[in-house]
Image (cartoon, helix red, strand yellow):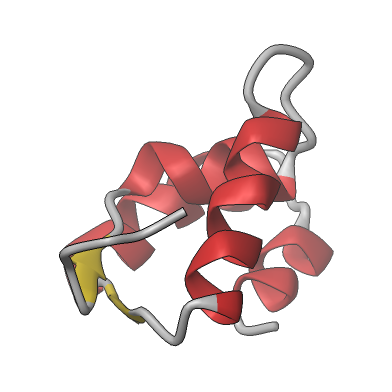
Length: 71
């Protein structure tokens, strides 16, 4: 598959779907990340995305999920 883009900004939902293994979108988000890696597409996100992602794991004291965000 050919892409015309070289970089992409990733918002909060995609990380949540991936790291929480969402039943509908977990595999799709994993495929997206894999596609970007294979095609050397730069992936970017921001501090606001990280902060939004951390709300629920901090609320439920799921620090492991927050650590997984970095990997």
